[in-house]
Length: 302
Image 1: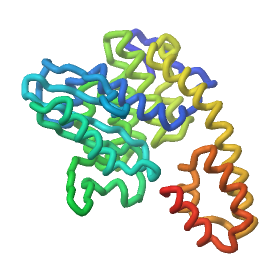
Image 2: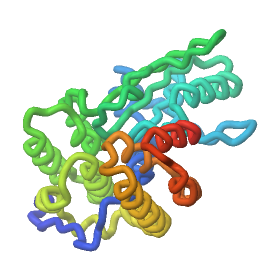
Image 3: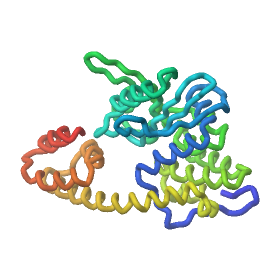
């Protein structure tokens, strides 16, 4: 990929795919810094009279990914970005919590909630758009990026990173098209930041060699966005490194005890925190069958 001045754009080879939170944080950065195209995409409305709200709601602190207030329509758009379903904190109940808090703080506003799942999964959780209990029903919209037409996302630089995750019969060509669009961004600072965000989100779908081939960029070294995400990635990476070691040990022990575990079990194990993995290491010797592990995971909310 080349910039408008013909300069070859290279990402440093020490860059690694950031931890999961970096994907969500990248979307949060885009929505908060470029709210208008997100409003156009999610609500099919055009407005430059937009105020980005603080993301921490009152009472007991609860943080949402992105809150966008459309003053012109007396409406609040709450966009919640999720890499994959979080079984420890089910999204339906969280959306109900967010809605109640928002209505309490902004009683005269209409609330529009959208959950955006970034990474393709077969989990049934990404098809749930309702919280339901004996006396309460709360609905919200759900967008699965891998089902979305990328064409509308290619119309604005701020949506280009998300376009890499859209529906396509030729994903590699889609990534190449996005890279070409990024290279044509005239504003240097914007190009740096959009390139950094595109590099990060593309990691959810594409192998690193292909991303490096199409999205290599020296300008990312100067990107404030990239530097911030890199710092967060390094900090989280130290924690993730410990977690990965614990997880690898647990999986080896389980495989030796019960044979190869299923991909579904492995996916649930990845959601465990470090303390939970440490607890599992102690109790798994008491398990007599895989069903004991499944029961234990359910007790952890997984």
